[in-house]
Image (cartoon, rainbow, N blue to C red; front, side, top):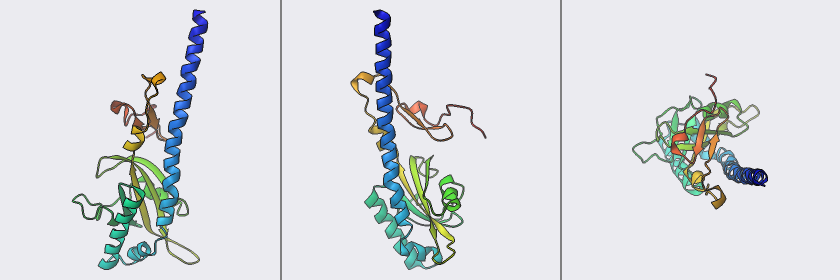
Amino acid sequence: AWQAGAVLGDRQVERQGRDESFRYSQLISNEVKRYTPIVTLSAQHPVLHQALQNPQNTELVAAANDIMLAMANIVASSDVYLMDSRGHTIAASNYQQPASFIGQNFSYRPYFRRALERPDSPAFYFALGTTSEVRGLYFAHAILTTGANPQPLGVIAMKVQVTELEQQWLRPDALDDAEMLVTDAQGVSFLASRPDWLYRAIAPLDI
C-alpha cells in the first residue's frame, strides 16, 4: 500500500508539473504571437522608410522619434527603435531620456542580424539589454525598399520586458515548493523563479 501510494503521488506531481509547464509555455507563446505581427506591420510605416532614406533630415527623424514613442505606449513595449542597415540607431522611443539608444550601434545583436538575413520574416530573440541591463524579448523586422527587387534599408526593433511573464507564474498550492526555469535555444536560462538560476547554461556551450 505504501509503495502504491508513493507511485500514485509521484504520478500526480508529475501530471501537475506537466500541466503547469504547459500553462507557462502558452503564456510565452501568446506573448510571441502578440508582438510578431505588430513589428511586421510597424516595418511598413512610410515615415520610417523616409527617415532611413534621409537620415540627415531632422524633421523626418523627429517624426520617427514620435512614432517610436507612440508605438511603445500603444503596444506596452519598453523600447522601440529604428536602425539603419549598419545597425546605427537613428530614432528611438527613449530619445528624450539620458540613456537614449540614438547614436548607438546594435549590428552585433542577433535579432538585428537575423532580421537582415531573413528580411521577409520577423526575428525573435531573448537577451539582456546592453544599455538598460534589463532582460527582454526582442522582436525585429527589416524595413525594405519598394520596387521589384527590395533591399533592406534598416531594421525596427521592439523590446518587451520579461518580468511580467515571471510574475504571471503563480505556484498552485499543490506545487508550493516547485520552481520554474526557461532556457533559450542555446540552453541558457533567461526566465526563472529563482534569481540565482538566471544566465546559467544547463549544458556546456558550443563556443
